[in-house]
Image (cartoon, rainbow, N blue to C red; front, side, top):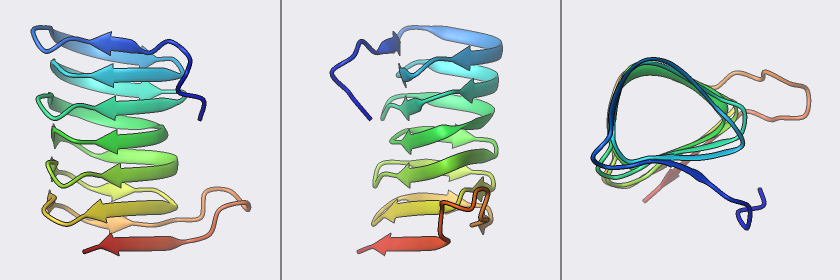
Length: 121
């Protein structure tokens, strides 16, 4: 993804409830309670606290998520992440130190993607 483009940011001091739909490049640092859909790259920052089901194309989780996470391309769970919910994507990377309470399902959503699971130690 081309990260030289502008990125929308939900700041650390922001708190929202409801259903949200984000565009190509979004970073969430605040609190969201509801449901989140992203059509591109969605980054959940280290200080973020999310109580929502999340779906998108590429998801990068640094913070706390309570809810199911689904991506049609890949999910990257960073070492600072805490996830309470099920994870579903054709490609999942989990960094050492991440905390996950839920099931991981790696399904082949599209014929172009292969099942894979990387456990980075």
